[in-house]
Length: 224
Image 1: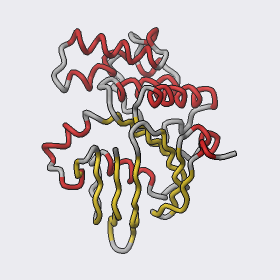
Image 2: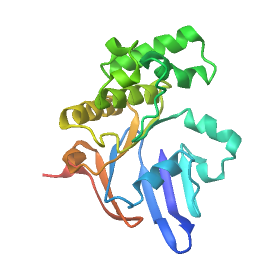
Image 3: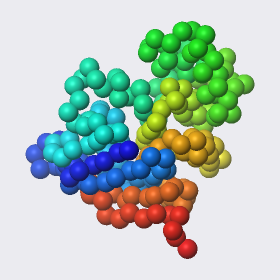
Image 4: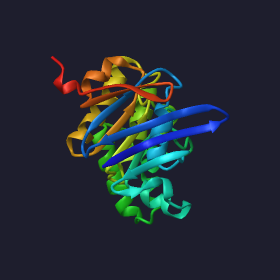
């Protein structure tokens, strides 16, 4: 589903965020990107979404060369993606249901369809009872699960999650991880960056980055 071919990203001078990355990700995998801060995990996720462009190399998503997409084509790519960021960027003056509906509204869905699908998305993250609450009335873990519901309301083929459990306690972090695992179980490809080694054995594959390079990669399902 996703292919990196000798991808490098250089921002300025001699500083490389990523260096000569070659990587294949299959449909339906749950992959963790591990490594210290500044290792290149966030840059790698942003490249899949077309937010960042490679300095060299090729990135393909479903056979489409993302690095060559024009700005007008990127919204069509992102409709297939669910993006979960460390900062949820929820609209504080809108209730939870409206926040989750927004990706559908901006792509032309009717209000009734957007409402129905947003309610289903909230049910998947066990927040149906918070639909009329406002973000500031929720805990940090609940806000992150709202962000997940918003990310999956478009029924994406791929979820990209950048440190989705950062700053959460273990209980809320587990709820976020369980939601991601449920989506993966339904066939969604999930790529998650995390510092939290507690979760690494939950992934179908772990890729360890350091200083912009892949230092190690292992399939946790094969570990004994």
